[in-house]
Length: 379
Image (cartoon, rainbow, N blue to C red; front, side, top):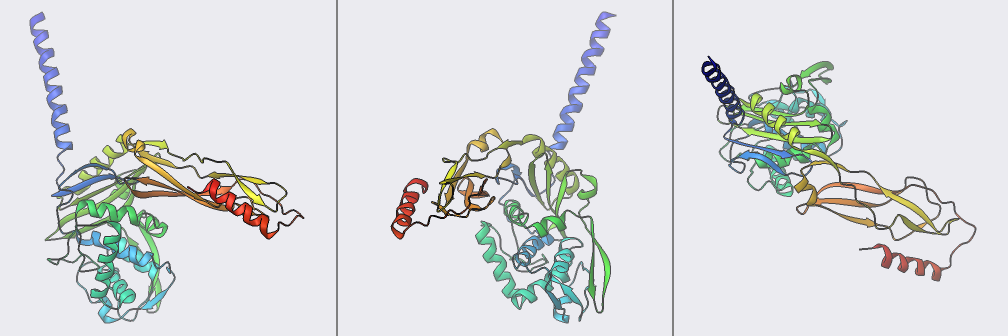
């Protein structure tokens, strides 16, 4: 009897182990031809396979189109669409020739319902033609460091010379999420906008199902063509940690991303990387006080212990100030670097104020203060 009970116990333990191993094996089996998971704060690669393999990226292309439009910083600007702008196959935000539409509404139209018409309108409005806009896209790709990417269309329609990689698309998404307007749009399940001829209200819906099925999802963009298969770029944030996942040609992309995002959010920890300034004050000329206290903004970064050690900081600060000095006045900047790339910048500000005194320094005294400041505060 004891032997039988012991045998049953061993069998149960083996069954549990097999089940656990099976689940883990399934969890790690990402369906994509190329995928990557990165730390959205540092760019550190946390997981991936074929991360530099050139593949079609379908409508995730529109992340770049949105970046070029957002950089103009004129969301309220309106254009009137032409037949050339809106004549394009595939998904649409519903534009017709002669419609009045703003740049903001074009952003919504390309990022939520993935409107190819919105992308085409953007390209022609900004650059005059699809070809010239593609040149801008490729120029920006080089600036970002997308070394294995080449754009041909603003929408992501198939072309033999239109390709990217999972890693490059992750770099692009890091860059894109620095724009508040893009970050806000991609986080919404739907947005009501006004356009048309005459303009009227309508609601556009996001194709990104993760926004409603994954608690920590904050975006970003879906994509699909027969050639590229299912493509997805997602981002998630939890307790100060942000991660970005990219899958290209992934039949099971929704589950792939839930697994990858879970892994990244669990792996990284929030750390205080705030730089300690060498000096806590800066000289003040012509004030009731000789100096004012300064401080830099707190910087919390999601990272591993290893990557935290690789984050360095450089600072620039004015050598001195002329009174009066206001509370919260910007006097410098701290740049945080990870592997030679700036990942965050914080202002150095005054945490006090100084009134102007009756005394006015001579030209000679100003020169003395100036050169003293340079030698003492500049690195």
